[in-house]
Length: 363
Image 1 (cartoon, rainbow, N blue to C red):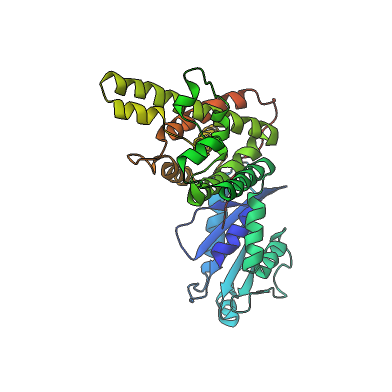
Image 2: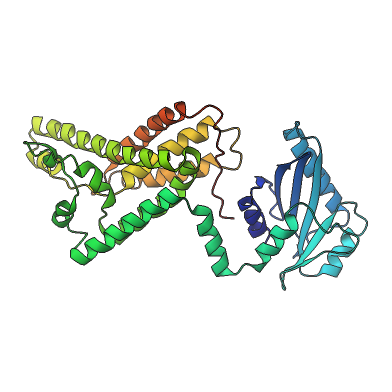
């Protein structure tokens, strides 16, 4: 339960302090006058010992005041999850630290008369979290992931997929080409169907292809839209669509030309007429933009794990390396293009405009 509680608090604007002990979760935030720290302790298995509560709160307070010397005044409060409130209270009766308890079986917050009744917004947040069921939790997660342009892009992709499934087979390359997917041949011999560089990013080969891309976009697009703003994010996404598609087209054209020069006509024709569709190139562009923002603001983004981002994007980009049917040129090219494009966007940001960039934490 303490993982759920700490995750819920991060949704409310708290930052999380990494603690090695699995029975302890710590969140904190800056308030007028200093730091407000909440320690969640799991005593459901009789883990807490007599006198340990004060040691924990004092240690956490010292660590954070040393880490943030500009906020020397730190107020710390503990919330203990337990199955046996009487036993837990006896272990804490001589402690000076303020604390509340949560009776885990009944999901009830217990505040005794000798304890503070309020601690900032912590009481409201705990009670709200305890009232959540599975449905309300899912709605909360979706609300946290909502951003207008990003969600609109996802719904547009889903809508187009439904229409195409009604009209034909989205796993058929010929049908997808007629719907707006592109090949290098569409840009040669006087055809110049450059519009396909844009439309191809809203078409997907089957529901699995769509689902994977939209989940990636949901998690990567929201924080970038929050940082850039909706209008700039929309422009950024469109440019990533065109940029990743153009890089892909150049790769197929020049590498196909190389294959032709060495006499591999089958390889040349397969590159020339390879039908490309999907949003993954643009999504890798978004991932590149996120990477730049993380690097630029690495000191301020203590709540975002760069390693987790790297693993996630690695799976997105390189899942198809060495596999047929995956446009790795669009993935890698889109990532580089998005990174460089985000540098340009940030350079043109208004002075004093310093939006926060925080992780979408799912608890």
